[in-house]
Amino acid sequence: MSTAHPMNTVVFIGDSITEDGSPLADQYALGVGYVARVASARRAAGAVEQVVNTGIGGNRMVDLVERWERDCLAYSPDLVSVLVGINDTWRRYDGGEATSTAAFEAGYRDVLERTAPTGARLVLIEPFLLPVRPGQADWRDDLDPKIEVVRGLAGEFGATLVPADVAFTARAREVAAAELLHDGVHPTDAGRDLLARTWLESVSD
Image (cartoon, rainbow, N blue to C red; front, side, top):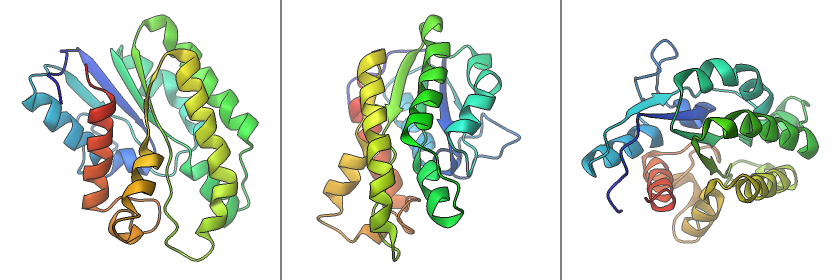
């Protein structure tokens, strides 16, 4: 990884994969997941920045839309990293609460349009899935179009795309899926390392 460019504030926002042990009462406590690992690596590379983790377990795109001002823009970020989408798929299959691809795209576009005028660098992480539990392979029918939305919006808004789904799928050809995502969604330590490494390789300065 090349030396990170110093920035004032980096905000990571998303669901439980981003939250991952970060207490909701303290956004500056980074938890134990990929956010903490990215922050540690960037500090070691010379970055001088304030890192904020506003991941909240269970969040879908609609939740990020509702709290975007409070939990993202209020920090006046120089870089915003977004990971959302797997719960929009998951709730369809375990709770019958479907989020259409169109609604997902509209919500995502809304938060990006609200962020673009600030000049913050945008980093969009693909939501990801490795089928571990029975029936999870079917989730691809819902998730894959949402991943395509993220890729398309990254290009449209000049954002950096972190190809997390590509990385997990490739690694799962070499090791058991459950070694990376213990329930098909949430990373193990090995999965956290992979996600952090993929982020750092994508967001080089």
